[in-house]
Length: 181
Image 1 (cartoon, one colour):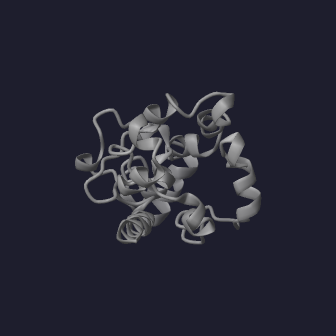
Image 2 (cartoon, one colour):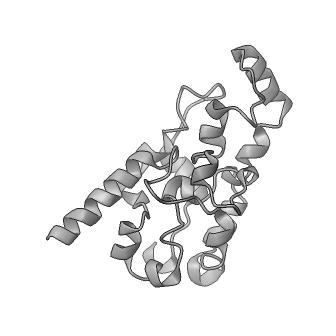
């Protein structure tokens, strides 16, 4: 009972910080670390679905003329690619170098860890094969959060917000393992 409670608390705490900060003590490693195990038909082409998504292009949007106009209209002192206000959603994780693995590349946009938690301590196959160990090591149970996780960024605080239909958007990025669909 005590172990289950600790895992539940780890999941809840991880969910509260996901998309904006590391779960205490874990580092963000980047989508490249996920690709090794989450590619191909057996895994439902999870990495490839992300790679073709707008999430993978989110950082590039910060380099656009539209982003430059938004920065100017808001009076921000830094370009969008350096603004914490913009990076919070266009990268989706902490941009504090102390919380990023040396291989983490913000230019890859909103990567796996924005939703699934900082992966430094659960990326190992030996951890990922044991769900309890993975949750205890920082993996976030995204299914438990659903729309709440998405609306941390997809909300009316975004200067480009035009509405958000969770079911419609989830259908575009859904990336379950075939056995779990």
